[in-house]
Image (spheres, rainbow, N blue to C red):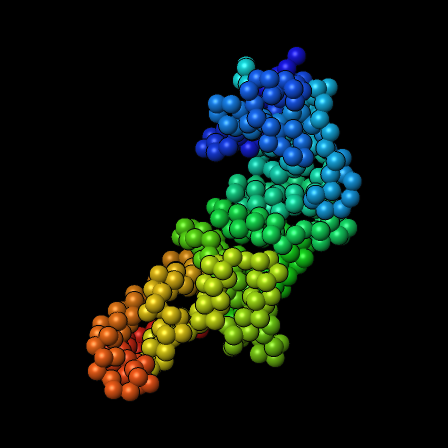
Length: 414
């Protein structure tokens, strides 16, 4: 008898009373010929997946998988009308994703106790086959960030073994970035980084971030002390502020340079902003991070200390920073960087509600510097080589009273 079941994330999210985005179906007892004769369109290349003629949702024939070699692509797929629903669900990663719903009766089929783990907030592997796909480590970490669930001890042990066996080394950079990007956009992205750190995958996937854990900071400015913990707090604050992906990535990498601070100046971190550019460049190249994310991250890493120090700067230095940040041509990107600075300041123990008057001050400086008539200055300058210098002088004249009025208003090193 041919039976159809709703499976995977759709069932899980429905049970959690969350919005269901995509529906995936499994058909048990059917053949490709049966599906085609009923108007379905074949789209799967590696295994039989069909699109419904009306809803265009995916319907896959029940299947099993067998590991053939290392990596997440090393699988042989087998599909047959004889494969049961339980066998199909057994190949899934987590118990909470191995729950099915009968399309006809609405009955919940839960052969691997996913409902219990869903109730208790636990991420647990379905079978020992979990170790066969290293992407599952990334997915599990992402689910931790989405749902706030804990990892079952036996599953964490499996993840550690996978890392020790070199399975994570087979991950391609594009897939790592894809999962990282999704995890950063979840409700509590710190839990993704924590999960990867606990199973020792972080030092393989993001060694620049892993190096931050255990690095001390001045308790006066960072009551949480540990730089890795501070980084987790900053990305969670960025999520709380509903910042975009480029901003959340910037929050993740903003203090990479602290891992390279000479031991003789710890717990101080003078110069960590500039030191952070090299590890950032390495990460961006390795993971093939999109330009929008890497561009903003570079700006934040390089300038965040000076942006924090807005009230301590001379007018000329403040104007130069606006120019370095390309704030005149790209004001939106500049304000995005300032948002990350807010997350940085508030991502500290007990400092979650800290004011950040630097934000408004920088916008006032930018407004003042922009109040000149650059086109008129250019037209009235005889030597073209003097145009940039004359525009700078005019901007400085407008900006100076605004900066001097506030200079010394607030001091602090972050």
